[in-house]
Image 1 (cartoon, rainbow, N blue to C red):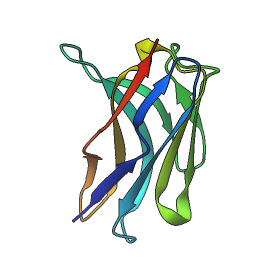
Image 2: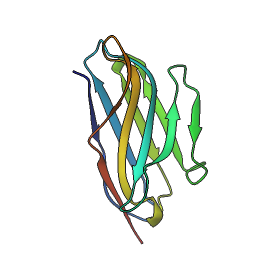
Image 3: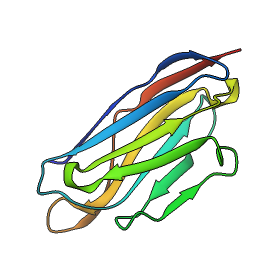
Image 4: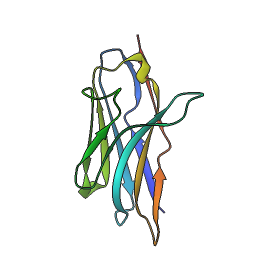
Amino acid sequence: QVQLVESGGGLVQAGGSLRLSCAASPSWFKVNTMAWYRQTPGKQRELVADISSGGRTNYADSVKGRFTISRDNAKNTVYLQMNSLKPEDTAVYYCNANGWGGALYSSYWGQGTQVTVSS
């Protein structure tokens, strides 16, 4: 069974940095695109950044120049380096991975990790 385990969330002051990690298992899970989404109460989940298996990246306008997504294909792990954090970045951040966890191509989600930026 495919699992995504996130880590790295927490409380930080505005202007600070955090690094999120998400490891996908088992090792035979053939991962294609990996991404980070975030959600605040009462709002839809929104894409923060995604990265293809070849390393092509895409960012939401609100995080361009501040966040960097990267991945280690050998470890099936995706990272989100968040710099110059703002209070409006406060949200639950979810890891997403699309790939072949079995016979079908599916989308999988992590449990979410809270990021809180204080002003």
